[in-house]
Image (cartoon, rainbow, N blue to C red):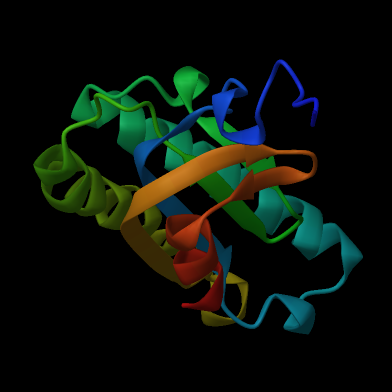
Length: 139
């Protein structure tokens, strides 16, 4: 008689696998800055992302983020309204960035690339896995 394990692989608890909104923002041509200006650009990226979230009524502190120098990758809480992120957040982000750039010489201005997607995102050993995080990273 064959003995079967008491727990089958498909009975194991699943990790946090849900439909989530994923976002990545990075500084275009970041390598053109010298080291002090890179520090400034990184600080301003963090500031404008937080300020745009706050102005939109989003709690940036609840975002699961992976900062990577000139890029922030974020998985937003499951209940985050897509229309809020795609509307107000993007509008406030553009305004915050415009305000920063208005006071800078052309060489010191920063431009952002922003990618947003929604889909399955699961926590993994080094961050996140799933089609949405992969799609955002490829944009």
